Image (tube, rainbow, N blue to C red; front, side, top):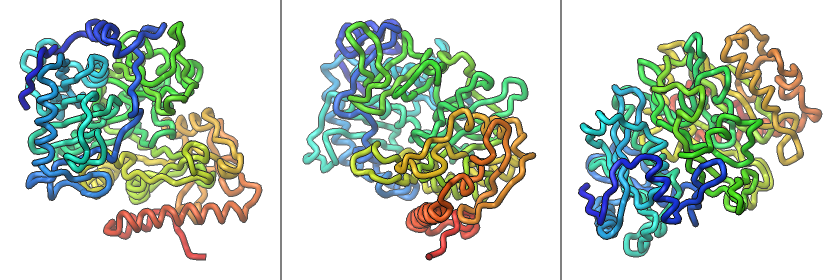
Length: 520
């Protein structure tokens, strides 16, 4: 893609981008030195505005549907022409960077931004090339981002005036009409998720860390609100990354060179690593700031999805380059607002594939308009919006790697116990969850006594150091045993209904590894 602009500022350093963003009014400076910017109407991703070009190259590869929505090459090219014409009289900012810390699988991305603050964001989120690497840089993919251009949705028969489009054949990505920087990050992730399986690498929406002495690696899968970032950030472990990774036969590697962490209710006491990373060079989105430059992380008046982007080296115990060994354990995190899943369970290979495919967590009453009861959310592979290939491609790779490397897999409920969230039940204390994670990581959980859960078809431990034994046995923890069974059957039915509706062709041995629901 040939880009012509009034001026193209290539690979400016952090200080230059900060100065431009401040002078142009794109951002303000907080008293901790971070840049604070506001993204306008879009404070999160716009999944209904995301499209993939449907052509001879992609047609038989993409899992088309509500998530991976097709657009013709002709319409994509017309939008691209409007974008390129729009840039001709603009001063723009280019960053050349890499995705993939393992150089064997690394891909190069050229990102052209209308806004300097977004160019700083992606400079901090991708892996930054050395001077020598820049001299020989040749992009594999080009991303063009124009948040102030708003399209005529009727002209192009698209969902709105915003547009996120990927042409996997021409290796071009357009992000139009939205200033939410997460769209850039996830466009890179979606692209890596398309490329990596053909190279024998399982792409994963997960965090990863390692033991500083043994170098044993752990992977944490989980949707928003389950504790993926919080639980992987530990002073006793080295952080490989907090969100996007590849799992090759050589080990686990981060796709990114930075982190994009949630800020809502952030405190130095609970999440010191993230809190201390918010400083000069970090980009904060949609956090309220007072006239003295103080950030209010508890104010959600703009959005609950407040964010900060910063480079990985802002975390003291980060591994750079962010590469680890083949994982010794995999942890699936879920926030069960029904309060019926065991706090921790051991999964078989088939059980791991079932829960990987299901990607379950739940929304709590009060978080969205109209939600009165806990609402299940099933996001395929714990990252459905970013997985362009058929679910079987990713699930098969996970199963093969679990078997090949004899990896232990656990399901950890970071949600509620002794009742539904909507009935006033309390969330499981973070300290208890951390002790469960510790038992998984040091292997002591293998020595526990186990019980079988006949509804959820799970084996769960009944004793872990630092965790009340009554908490580990979910039915016994409930006062009303009959209501526990009724609620468990209701959730089991939701699991089954979701699986049968979305994955009817998955093998029977994987289906049988899920919850057991019988009509009553």
